[in-house]
Image 1 (cartoon, rainbow, N blue to C red):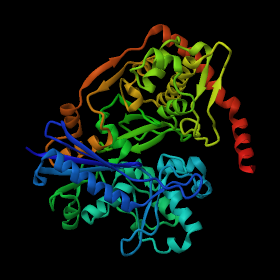
Image 2 (cartoon, rainbow, N blue to C red; image 1 turned 90 degrees about the vertical axis):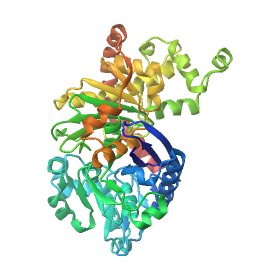
Image 3 (cartoon, rainbow, N blue to C red; image 1 turned 90 degrees about the horizontal axis):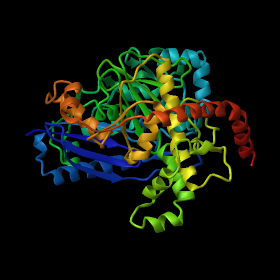
Image 4 (spheres, helix red, strand yellow; image 1 turned 180 degrees about the horizontal axis):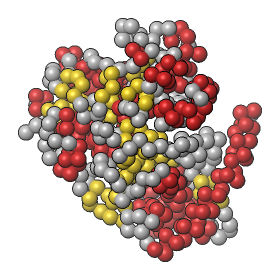
Length: 512
């Protein structure tokens, strides 16, 4: 029996799993590390912590699975996108990595768009606008703010690719992760010479780029000693966490899409062509499926909105007495179930940490709209669930606008465990929603990529067919769908009305 190992270098920790030739998960292991915030709106990590956690989780997974490392046919890797690891000429890390959620580069984003013909010109070159989380503005920030560090730079790697370097000694990346750097020609699937020249960034700073299932390196002697893997084990290019998660959810064929209802909400849609929104409200990236693409929309506070409600308000004491055996989130759902669809006219805008899709506005704030004496805890909980569903529908409306049809929709993430939230989303979207037998997401997708690279699976489509199965279905309810259609139109009208007020509030907070 041969096995595949996949690992995910996430924001809070590294997760490793081992799967067999039929795509069954044998074991999972994880190891955590801290997130650093040296200043407000900054987010950094020490790449050495990623490597320590990766070694620990791989070793733990091999031990628990009781698998001989020689039986690992290949390794796949994925991780948080957009982060920047700056290396000097001796391959030493120059400074802590700047992460995807870091917000320090607003001025650099304006500089990039100004240099490349405005937002429209940049989107023509890279299929995406300049966002503070992307990699290119981080490089410019280092040039402007830490010139002594910038002078030392010889390589810029994404998080998973730095771990690959330590594991194999090779500089490599994949097309899906490279798509999120703003230095990549998404349509031609290569580094953009126009962008690199305009921004004066040497191409030799960047790793070679490959399709995700390609074998690009092998575990080195040093990597083997550190992790317990066998020297010479093939390592595939892997993928960014969203593309690998798309593979791990079976989104590898036309008409397929997924919703990840985690702290943030992600709409991930397969695309045969590099379709993009001309206003940059959707991301268009290369898929981990060779020669294919995906479009993506993001609601920054999805299940995070419900967690905020839980932490600030929580379930009522009367519900705790009525249901003493239920946990807090189940109690919140019970409260919401006692309220009819539409929350009796109460709407929630889930902009607790700004918003990305469709508004890309860091000034937006969360709003309860329509409050009356009639509304209680259950209305608040249900309106939070409905507001997140409306925000995700915003993403799907943009997907529809660029001509992509979604026929099969899969849901995953912590929020997907809620039957009420699944039903609400089905009703708001007017579409059936499927649950599947796999919850491991990106790490599982990375392992499937390794299976294709090693020849165990003939293609990603075959790998998905063998390993991912439907286990549940939520159908839209006609009466609720009619209510939500009317409320969604009101929901959509609120951001344009409040946009200027959001900006003025943000400016007022800066003054203070």
